Length: 129
Image 1 (cartoon, rainbow, N blue to C red):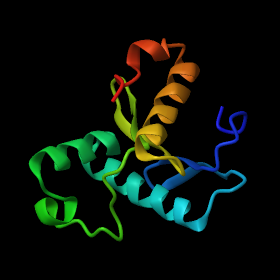
Image 2 (cartoon, rainbow, N blue to C red):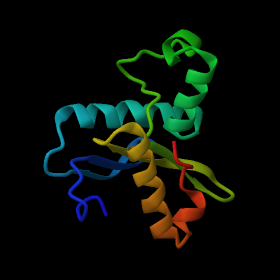
Image 3 (cartoon, rainbow, N blue to C red):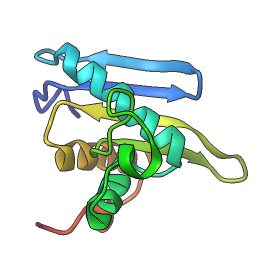
Image 4 (cartoon, helix red, strand yellow):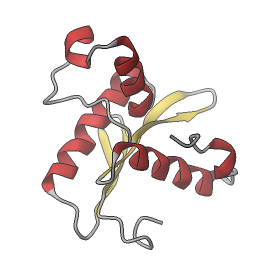
């Protein structure tokens, strides 16, 4: 999906403590790789999407550093990372994308998960801004 669209993104799928898949597509930068790690850490900490955490911080008028003492160098509350959850087991890992604007990173992950799981993306896509 990202390759077909020519997106310059870094993509990671991780089980907690294990790297399961990583790709830095053409045009992705080391900064994208660093953002992947920071977003993944946020999901691992909160067990929610990084976009949801970012929206929560914005609504509260605070940051992860201010509210939770989490350093910006290790955590990012920007869209693009999701918890991977298995019924009966809970969160088992993360899937993360970085390289597009945060909302687009978030939507790319949702669309990819929908395609993989056979769900209707239109039913889960974010409403227009």
